[in-house]
Image 1 (cartoon, rainbow, N blue to C red):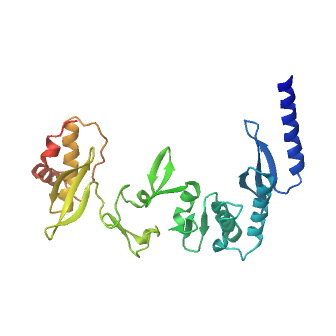
Image 2 (tube, one colour):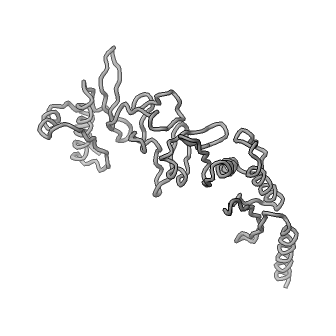
Image 3 (cartoon, rainbow, N blue to C red):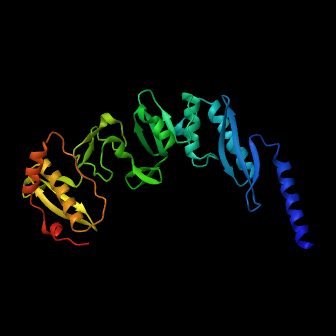
Length: 283
């Protein structure tokens, strides 16, 4: 009896809370599975219903609603106006400003310009992309780990550089470069691929440049050093073949070499030196 009485009292309190806050515009009470109450904030602008987030208190949800209305109705409010004390999350702030100024709403923090768009990771970290990438990044959230940017796609973490023909773990300055020096500018015109082959890097040793090939097994193993990029790319493929023949069941990528006849490929392949660390490797 006592337990039933407590449940009734709890339900009555919840109903009272709902009634007390039902007059707050833009606030909608909800209940978690545990029975705990929370409050959702939303608004409608240009016939579009926009969720502003969930909050523990009705007053917080209402403050988010008021802030959202202010952003949408005040042209003087810009990205630089944002402050950490805002009741709205920064991502939502950007989404609302973009909808106000450009008529396009995205759940991701995108702000469109005439010839490109910005993707705001934070108030101080902004990436720049071509308009052609707008749909992709409107539906794929960018995450950052160190200087590595990636999205979740089909259950995997995909590096954003792969969209531009750059290898997933390519190193800036060695495998590709930003032409204007801005490492946040991912417009295609600003990306130059320096190395298109897996496992190959141009290095200097004893005052001379050569193409070094490494393959990752359990750590990086040196395959060899070669005078040309083509030989280095084929050496990587040969190392992969040797490792598979020796019983290593790992899915290595293969290098595709254009404008090379099968006969010439086979000739280079057969004459290439491969380090004993690879030829004698056993899993």
